[in-house]
Structures are given as C-alpha cells and as structure tokens.
Image (tube, rainbow, N blue to C red; front, side, top):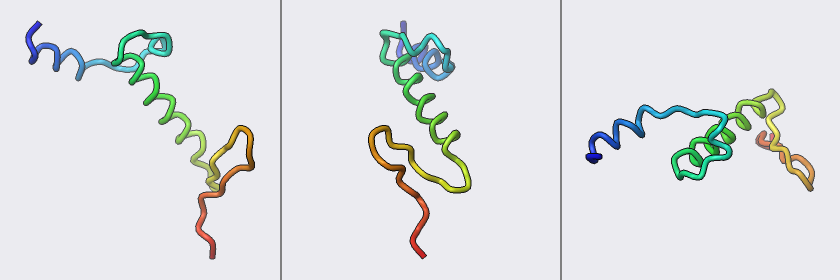
Length: 64
C-alpha cells in the first residue's frame, strides 16, 4: 500500500467499541482518546473536580 493510501485510510478511521480490545496501535490509540474525551465530558460539571480512585477529589476551581 502506498504511503498516501495508508494516510487516507488512517484519516478516515473512526472509533469503534471493539477498539478497546484492539491489538493495533491505531485502534488502541482511538480507544484511549475516546476514554479521555468521555471522562472530560462526564466531569464537565459546575463543581469541576477530578475524581481520584484512592484519594479525595481534586477541585479545579481557583482559590478566591
């Protein structure tokens, strides 16, 4: 496959839920990016805090 054709194939690729089990770098990267975007979207609340698994949440607001 030529380099230009590969570039077009990669550029046209979209996230698919099966990417979480993908063995390819492209699929794994798309899954990781999707996870990061969905985390940011879910955390986009008015109180804006980062959830920590084993620690208290970190507020993102600036001290007044």
